[in-house]
Length: 395
Image (tube, rainbow, N blue to C red; front, side, top):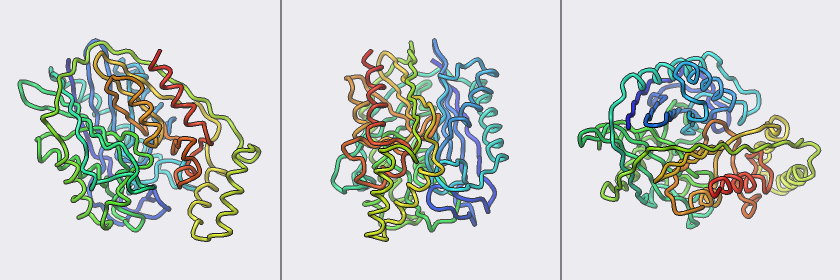
């Protein structure tokens, strides 16, 4: 097996509109934003791309994939493009805020940097072996963000690549919102994921590529003491110190089987009975409690600006000893667990991948917390999508 890796800066100019909370404008750079590329070649080709932005719209991912597919003979289904979901990066979508100020030149910069990194990764491959380790994060780092003692995915998965006994790269899957810095922050930053990358490099000498797992209802809400960069470092230290290198097994990434699972969403939020019931309930709640204005404004965006007519896809990559599943949004723990525990094979979830459709909340919890109102999926739709994924895995 062979791998190649490259990364490059995609830090925008100071002054750009920031996306992730309410719109505001950056006034400085705390740390650079990056794109990272990991290329794996065996009897197959598989390309991982991680971006230090809040989300990747599907049509943007498609455009990048077309260029890569034509230039490097990699099928688009074997290219994974995912965001680390920093809330302190530039505005890059029209999925989260009204009238966003999206710089098309910035997307061109991202595209150009990715294409160059893909070329470097492919042209500098090394023969490697792979191991996988699983660790449990210190619960002081992050947890369920709606109920402090509720369950969450506390697993950190490391897929490590070795050459002559030396680690040459790693892929990490971490299941939390990477948000320590809040809406008052105006400094561009990759936040918690960027700090975890830096800490991992200090520990191992290599910079990992990092993806998010089922993080829809997981964050540092109850564990962070403040929203400062010192606190970002403290929590990143807890995460890195949780890693258990002893719990490691060899993995043979030989044959790969790829399945695409499509989901069609088509409803008009103005005429849909279900959407209207939700809308009128939110309005009623706001009339009784003005502190719920944030929820009202969030769902107002979905109602009047949200994309509710689309087809999106998840992908299943089955190897003999492990499985990778991508998902185009933010999965809550209950739905992520269904995918991860559908059978006994170790499953690595990569969410916010190839598209972004907001939160995916299970029907049992739908309507209880904020995530339900920042989702284009109505009650039961996310369950239906996840059930389709699980059925394809079983097949």
